[in-house]
Structures are given as structure tokens and as C-alpha cells.
Length: 606
Image (tube, rainbow, N blue to C red; front, side, top):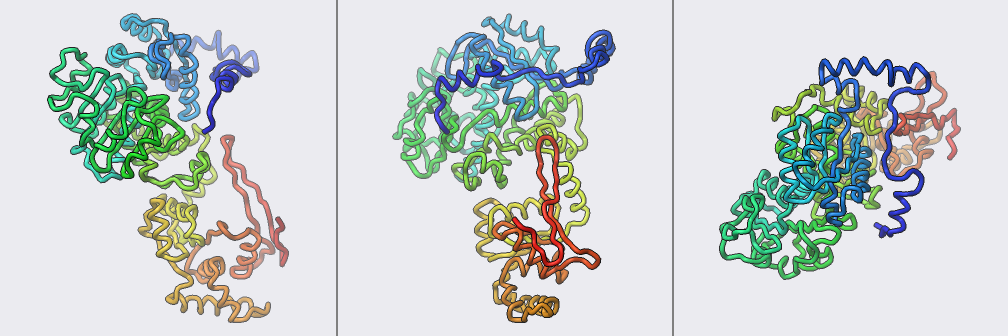
């Protein structure tokens, strides 16, 4: 990623319309009647309805899709206490992320108040406006009291993202890192450097995932947090260790399995990393510079899994993987809180998604040839569009199961479709095709199954019940490719068309093709030779009734493929031409257009 200069940043925020967000009308407003409905006198009717039943606000106003991002500017990113107004660009940025990733509208609210009681009173006073509240950049320990009291006193979701967002995302990464390293979470020894809001929340969530308290050592600026210290706040006391043999971070690191850093740059040394157990996990999340640099950490030992908060290295622990989708799920069931069950559900959903094959759109966005689950990919990328449909439903279901949902979702397929449509990922045409295919799955030949894109397509089609894949290619090579990209080949037939075992089939297909094309001069020898070609062989499977459809095109050109289809399958009696269609999905809808047709012996030209 290229470095962002001060000039670039200031220009981005100031040019055109200042800032990053705006309010856009959602109803018609071009006529006098429209205005009369939008405001007086028509607006009185929904007001009266809401007066009678407060829940009607979700029906007649934007409350159900509106989140407040609220801060007093006392702990802004790596800038510290810069004041409420100076933190406004961050809050606007948070609003932008809510909108682009989950379709949630945001008002950023900067409260010029450091006193917790007065801050809480201000937030409570404006809370009827919103469906949820995201607390942001509030310093510890005040943030603990503020969040706790607001959660107790309000009946809408409230979350301090600096605490819980980091916990959820790093928790998902931790589960996957432990899996890769072959370690059991209940046996893992954890060292936490830092004792602020995020460190406290992360440690609590890790305990919910299975880390045992006796295996945790937390370190602050004064040393190991132990029961022998008399200067501990209530937030720190809950993590105090009874061990007396450790006093420093270096002591704590010896024999540790996991390091979680939420502190300051360069406090972790190469020697400390080398003193950890075999196959260690280091999450150095201090921003902008981690507790140990990527280069130093990776050079210290080869069996390390390493993550930071930076986007220029693998395994970025980025809160944007969580908060938009957590609030999306919470809003959609009108949850009265974001509880531990919902946080854990989000954690597990994110961890699970990482193990799924990564779509090409994500690989392309990051300029990476092929992402796959492993030491350098323990957490999804921020631009992965699947996060919405993976995390939001998991959170919504957890809210329902834990009793904090006021609205229950019964049709989860319809909910997923609504989420996709909300973000412009909906494709009505292809969805209808998919539903038709699921009713009677056909046998589909995938010609170039030795190519990752086609193999993933076959796997996805089978998982979704669209078809019964038949893979053409060398079974050993396909097996290795499947393992490398995380594709399960169970239930998929593999045919090595060039293997001696397929000679009888090649002979039979050659005889059929010769009978069809001998008047045009094709000999049996020519037909038999063509059976070593994926396209000829696969189309002969369709012609012979051993498959219903054929997919190709990774390597072959369109015109050449059409010619083979004409030779092998031909045109149905009564028809004189065949054609093709381009389908393009956009956020404005699906567009389809016939692109070529072929009449007689003419072929489409490119």
C-alpha cells in the first residue's frame, strides 16, 4: 500500500463537499403533494401513531437502520485526548464504513464532555433517535463505566467498538492460528501486554473462547499484574495472576504460546519471541507501529504466526471485519443489547469464513494470486463481501437464541437475499436460475478442473445443490490443487480423459463422432485423436447422454469452443442458429445481452 501524505489526506477530506458523509432523502420530494406528505400536514399521522405505540417508530422512521457513532475525543486512534471536535473526521469515517459495508446510516455525535455522568446523561437524552449506539474513542477507565451504564439503562444495542471490535476480530484470528499451530485453547498460555479497554475486552472474550484464567499473565507499564500489587484498579484486578516467579514482560514470555500486544511500539524483543513455546502466536496490535516489527518477528523464528493492526502486512486485525455486520444483525432483530453470545457468534462466524475458498473478487482487490487458509491468512480481508452474509445472520440468530431479540427472523434464505440486495450484491436473474437448477440438479462437466477458478466453481455449485459436478483432468493433480485451495472433492466425479482406463470410452465417442461427421470428411483416426481434447471429450459426454451440460472457457477461445459444439452436438432440428449471452451484475440491477449468433457454417467473429 502506498504511503499517504499529509497533503493527500487533507485534500481527500476537503475537496468537493467537505467531510465524508451526507443525508439523502429516501422518499419523493418533487411535487407539492410530496412535500405535504413529508412534512406538514401529512407528517402528523405517523407522529400520532408513534405516540400510541413507540415500536411504530421502526415502521415510520429511519430509527431501525440508524446508528449513532458517539465520542468525546479522549482516546482518538493513536492521537490521544484531542477533544471532541478534533475527533470528528474519525467519527465520520466510521459512519462511512458502516454505510459501505452494511448499509447502515450513521449520525456522528461529538460530545464535548469528559465527566462520565454528564456524558451518559447526554447520550441517554438523544438515544430515542437511534436503533443502536457505537461508542468510539473514549479513554479508559471511564469507557468501562460509560458502556456498562448505557447498556443497563437503554434498550437498544450499545457497543464500545475499541474494546469489543478488537476482541472479536483478534479472537477469530486466534482460533484459526491455534488450529494451524495444532494447539488446544484450554492449554494455551497467554501473555497480554497492555491493560487498557481493548486488552481487558480481548482477554475476557478469549476466556469465553476457552483460555483459562490461570494461564493468563497481563502486563502493564509497571510490570506484571499480580495479586501482590496494591495499585490495581478493579478492571485490572480481575486478571491478576497469583504467580510470584515473574516480574517483567521478559519473564512472562518464557514458555508462552500466545502474545497479545495492545500497548506501545517496540517493547517486544527478538529474544522474547525466541523464548516462547514451539509454534507461537504473536498478535502485535499497537498502532501505528506494533510491539515488534514484522521483519524482526518473522526473522526470529520460522514457526511463528504473526498478526498486526496494519494493512501492509498479512493478517491485519481490522475492526471493520466486525462492527458493521454485528450492528446489522442486531438491528435486523431489534436487539435490546449486544451481549456476549452475540460477540462469540460473530467471532466463530469470522473464523469459519476464513477457511472457505476465497472468491476471485477478493484476490483481485488485493492483487494477490490466491489467498488460502494458512499462517499468512488467519482472518478474512476487509473487502470480502461474504462477511455481511456470514456475520450478520450469526449475530441475529445469537440475539434470538439468547432472548434479546424483539423481532424474529424465520426465513434465513430470504434474509440472506435481503442482505445481498441491500448492498447491491443481489442478482435476481441468477437467483431464479439457481432455484430452477436446485429442483433437479444436472450432471455438469467442468472441462478445466485443474484450474483453481473452475475447481472452486464446481465446489460451490455442488455445495449449493445446483449440479452434480464431473471434473475432467488428472485426478492426482486435481487432488493436490483442491488441498492447496481448501476444496473438498467429496461427491465429485473425476475423469482423466487421457488415462488408459478411459480408452474404451474414447473409442466409443470416436465412433459416434465419426458417424455424425463422416460425410464432412472426418475419419475415425481424426475423431479418436480429438478425444484427448477436453472440449471434444466433454461435449461427447453430453452428446452420449452421460452428462447434461458442459462448462469450459478458462483456456479455450469462444469461437473455437462454439465450432466444437457445432461439430459434436450440432443444432437442434428446426433451428438454423445458436447464440450466446453476456450477463453482467451491477448494483443497479442485472443486465443481459445477446452477443453473437451463428448461422450455417458462419462463426462469430471477435
